[in-house]
Image 1: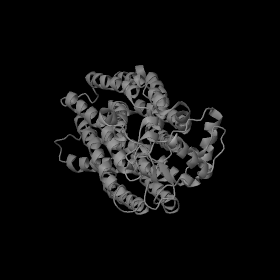
Image 2 (image 1 turned 45 degrees about the horizontal axis):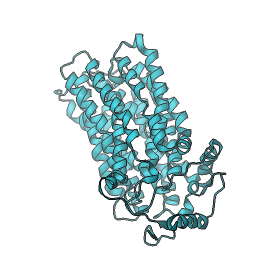
Image 3 (image 1 turned 90 degrees about the vertical axis):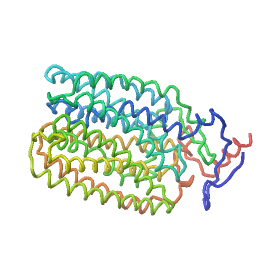
Image 4 (image 1 turned 180 degrees about the vertical axis):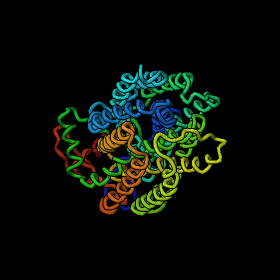
Length: 477
């Protein structure tokens, strides 16, 4: 093994390691592990998205579903803020295992199949506990997904994860469409939930067969550095240190906050309000399918041959264009109806075509937004510990926003009000992110930019030279 520059012109030397060969080499590949992460989320939150995408959790009365989402995202917001510290203390694999304790999601699905008057309290309580699990799951997932690829591969890895993750929405929606194609009751049948239960149970077992992050070697020969500090005090100090040493992250917070805000209007106030069950099911299938292509499309921009700063500005511009295209288009539909909506547009209705294409474009926008948000965090750091904390901030603020807007929907705020708030907050989120891109995104991340990876067990941040000497000593030992 030898020392080499990670990238031409880099001032930081990295230690490179020989990668295993054969089946063992395939298993320990970063891409293999990211694919496994994708299937964990495909079996859990992906299927959750499929049900949410039907509008009202697949039920006629969307209020119970909306209140359950308020409980879910409220606990998610609280736990998510500290989830990065939990991940760094316990390790990503154990945190994933705790996060995939999504058997509660099964009960949520089942209780949704009952009348809300009998099961409403249980639905809401299940949502709250699910939020705790989700906070842990996404912190571990995000840190590994962003730490495993090299800097030139991050957009591609995010797109691969996003494509697999959205298979949950695709397959879940396909199951719903097949089982409810001739269903005229307006609610999802029990067969749909049973199919989801089986798939969710499979996803719980996947983290137990994943490789330890310490054994994963990137394609350039570098190892993922996983700082596991021994005390909770050190972890909480690290959370503060990220904000203190890299305050530009705060400019991404509005972008994080709105990253799930738009789901409420799209799912409940457009799909759930306008279409019958067959139309909603087909729309949901097309929405999650379009997400695959949206994430892949934006990854071509984010991982192009241009320098990283140019790619960052290009991704920002693509998002701004998509926001105005979709929301100007949607505005002319929104002014034609009010709450509760007609709920009568079928796939054979002449009104269906234009609206379903709009829904597909919303799917593009969602995946582009999420992929770019993750990519920007990855452009700030390659340190798995710091990334876990940033992803925790991301999911916490995302969930806080979602809790607020789902509550607004539950108290039956006018559709137009929720729509306008969605449009405005998306634009504001991008405007705040622009100075961060200009001032903070570099063409290459140096070790001097990585604070947590240089922090010792006592919370002291070491010099770059000390960390490099330590890496050399490990290599030559």
